[in-house]
Length: 281
Figure: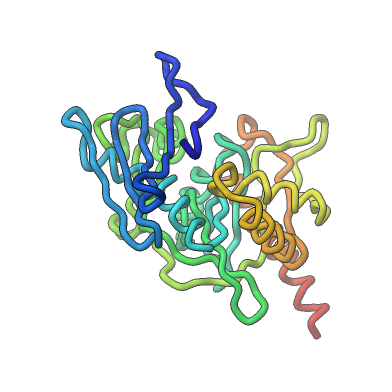
């Protein structure tokens, strides 16, 4: 066995296990509910199988999330566990721990007419000495409480699958939201869910060292990489932290609604990019 998650099911089994099969010809990924994936050695082919008590929709929820993140990382792409939206032909990236509000914030921006590049997986590429975000898939996955915050009812969006509580915002299908199909350079990165007690609501800069630590803890497949892959990822993240400013939203999610959060970010984006244009003259 190459990996077993520390999260255990009610019967004490790892929620996720990964093996090498047939002398390394295949990589086998198995979830505790019986959904399985196989990757070939070159990471060009992928197969999936699900038990009779599961569904295609349930399997796709794994494929478009952790499996895709693992596959891309094994192919050499560095992926952040984050969301990204487009403002003025540039991307802004939201990072933070689980439940920090990354997807909710992206969906709020979508409601306000801003195109979304990615939810959950932000794939990084370097072009012309700039980091870009690649467009992902045309949906945002949201828990029911986030759907209620944004739409007034937890049932306003369809479920991802009958087995899942999460719901799905299909970008571009409602005539209001948009999906960004271009790879865009990253202007700013924002950390959500890490407010400082007793400080007023604000957006504050983060040092490059803190930014680096934040990025390292928000990448995909970290526990699965070998030493060389970790070293390569560290170099990429170092360049990202050095070249793209990261800022912290100093506001607790329970005191600031998603649209107020968007306003704070938009105002900070406008101020920051205006200052950049002054220095570029």
